[in-house]
View 1: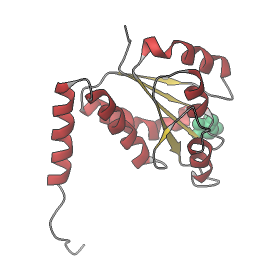
View 2 (view 1 turned 60 degrees about the horizontal axis):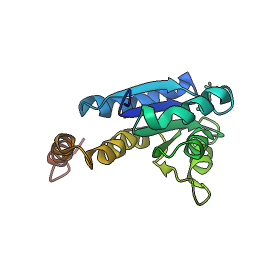
View 3 (view 1 turned 45 degrees about the vertical axis):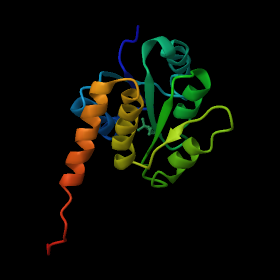
View 4 (view 1 turned 90 degrees about the vertical axis):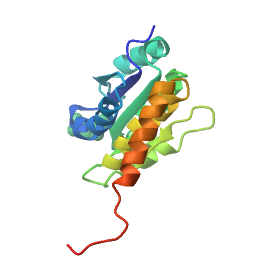
Length: 161
Ligand code: RP5
């Protein structure tokens, strides 16, 4: 029995403004989630504990971190639950550090890595929705409607500012 469909985890409170954009998408689509601070470096025992119990707790994990962003990869090492990684934008290196820390996983322990920052976080929510929609027809219809609405909102022609 899972507690929520999606587990959103992040390395720090400072990641929440970015990771909230994933939560916002899940809210829009009516998907249940929990959000937790789990740091690979500052709370390694919490990370291990979450990873050990993840399979009975959530169906998909969205993991965001910045800098030496080891959280998504370590979580993928600890659980078979699919992990979607969000590289949080950093001041020092603009999030390229986060991206490289997350994307280059060794064969055997994949992390589905999104774009750096806001777009990546929102897309993580949509990716989680797509995974869940494979076995949830009602969610699939909602996701299709969400995508259609986005397409419909794009104008045919540009206008002057
Ligand atoms: C990482 O260090 C976190 O994911 C965060 O992106 C970054 C900075 O954390 P704070 O110093 O703002 O807590 O572990």
